Length: 199
Image (cartoon, rainbow, N blue to C red; front, side, top):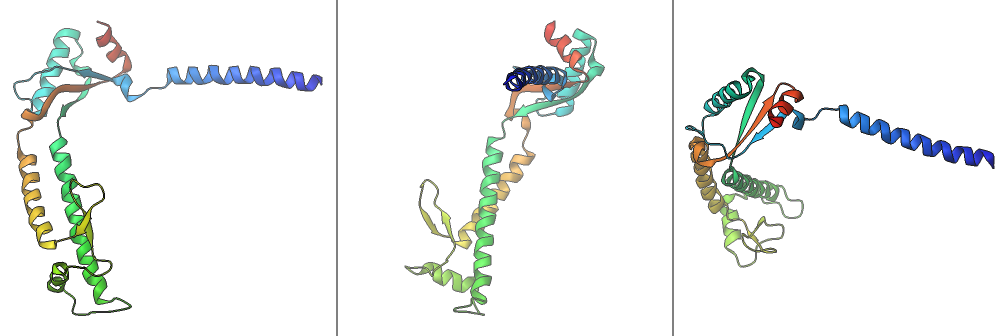
């Protein structure tokens, strides 16, 4: 009985020691947030130019905190929602085209009903039928939760060209219009970040 009581108190003591050590370890470990300062509502003459933003921030930190040399790098935030949605559509269309191409190859060597002459032209003929063959590639219909329809490879390729052009224009577009006024500033040491935030 005494052994059970001693073991009970020993486990309580060990638990408190583990919690204490975990808190100590957490307070001593460094995370990226310890080195980062987030500037909001910022405005620059050239908001799409990363070098310009970096130079201005280094100059500001040197003038106000005498620590411009402590800036490791800066990362400006931009609205990339349109680029992301366009890239997603690009990937979807490439997947649809690949699915159709795979289906055509599979039809040539099908175990039950092989058709070595099956081609895109025959695929288009099947697409025009009221009922498409079993396993015919289908894609989700935009705007519908459960709707799927057979993939029209010509429409997919045409839309893919348009999406590629949109991506090219987004990549070459001036980022200044997409600047959110937020810059993440990474400093050399956590104490540098604390010094700025405490002034």
